[in-house]
Length: 254
Image (tube, rainbow, N blue to C red; front, side):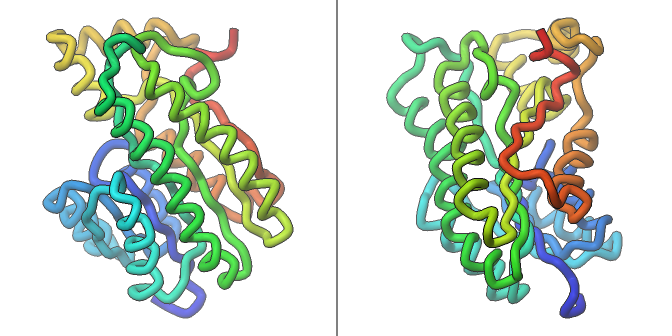
């Protein structure tokens, strides 16, 4: 790692979209702080990135604990001395209508999907400022733009992330800190398979059913979402801030 190497922190990096983002940014030359809840998977990802020639460091913890949000930012500063990109990807999803949503489901969903995003952004802003600016990319959802069935808490959290993203973008544009949200539709990740399992259904059947709801007739690959995130984090997207960019196969087009 040289003094010119940019540093990216990716949360929820132990699997799915987060792992794909960490790989994409590593290939793009970033040093990556990979944060995840699973110690085994997070360390395995960091080792994979290192073997591929990237500089990577694992961080393990549950960002539902707001104190750990400041902790991972501090750990990034201590390890790398700077921060240029923050990708808030960690998220959870409970399949439940409002009446089926328990207090614990509501609290857990908002703690991870919304509050952690806020606390991480707040803690990261001074480091981004010290780097002369940078980018925050928040992973929201197409269900942060339109409603979804059996997802009251999830939709509330992701919709709030979209609006918070726009507010942060306005507050920090003068500091050359860009803030955008990516709004994926259905993506072929372990979360999709877990959803099928919770319904007692075959994952392939659920995947096909969900794919039929998109104009393109398929679900996204994690690597497609990662490519969009890497673009928004890069200088090539230097005039994009406050955007909520859909990557949903046309599911919210009409």
